[in-house]
Figure 1 (cartoon, rainbow, N blue to C red):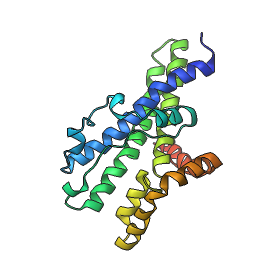
Figure 2: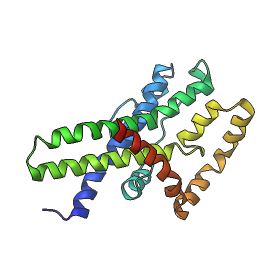
Figure 3: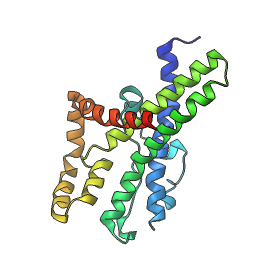
Figure 4: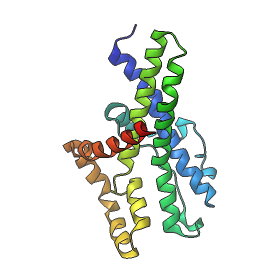
Length: 204
């Protein structure tokens, strides 16, 4: 049997690819539903992880439980209300990850009971990794710093002037995120969000 750390790493890779694929697919699917053909024309309406993979972002997700994929290109000019449309597209990604985490939580125990103990342990580990990765990825993307989804959600809720001011941070957003990650503050910001999502999952 493989050492626990190695087996966990091997299980984390497909879980990470699944998490980023469902996240970006959800963005593209909602944009397409709202009238923007850009994701479909650029080949992003797919669950194939190769279409969404950002190698560095995926590695970050495997190692630190928060990362990113290659962003889906969206043209808000196709939306009736561009600001609201972008908000709906943005919320679709984290919501897809939360839904996937809840799916694994609900079905994991059921399937584990049908298998032999060794296979059940492996399956439970895979389900637990998927739950954790999806919740952390959703929480990371809910941080309201551009270009993360949380900033676009907040822009859709704020009055025009405040939303414009938040959009101006996009130039500095990547630097702010790097500082948060390297200082360890990102984990401190994410823990309360993950705990709330986990509580909700246990409640359901």
